[in-house]
Length: 295
Image 1 (cartoon, rainbow, N blue to C red):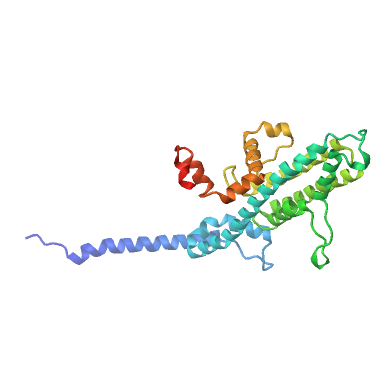
Image 2 (image 1 turned 90 degrees about the vertical axis):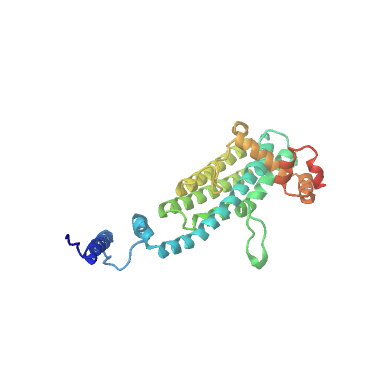
């Protein structure tokens, strides 16, 4: 008779081989992780840029940590969400600077120093005076603090906050702070130019276009620093530098139409008193008689 091998010997050999393989794999992973860890710094700390670079370099290893990686993402999400809100508000403020203030600048741009305008009472001179009012600080607010100008509240302040949120890398953060200062300087030059030459509309228009270039520079750097695409809500679009450039862009023509509709007081009143959301009403327009359901 043929003798069968013991049952225990047949079942134990694969189990032992598998266990040994798992142990070897674990030891190899530990050795690889230790080999890739940075050496301790002799000074006891690492500079900010070196720390960020090290974190980026070891991100694949840290992702295997599980709970620690999840906590890091939770800590970063509120900051990015705050940046997204700031970017949305800044985009709306940029449209105010482009459309509302830009229209006033263009209205005064036809004024020439040789034109007869008694003490600046003509409409074009008054338009330039309104531009300077929006660009310069007002009186004293509560607590004796000087009130900020409208352009500071709408643009300079949120740009400064975004540049100091530490969502960019250190070099990009430094560049963005410089770009905020450059834009602020261009705005001051526009205000000072109108004050020195209140009847030179063309000079004001050129200085206004220069401030748009500075604003576009900040927008471009912010998008590049975060790798933001044009279809994302954090994207800051490039502003057209003149009316001809605006008319040549389908995007900005649609934005202008939407902006004008939002600023129309009659449209605002109708929107406040309408039944149903705007999106729902637009969808129901495709079906004849369906809008009667909302009346």
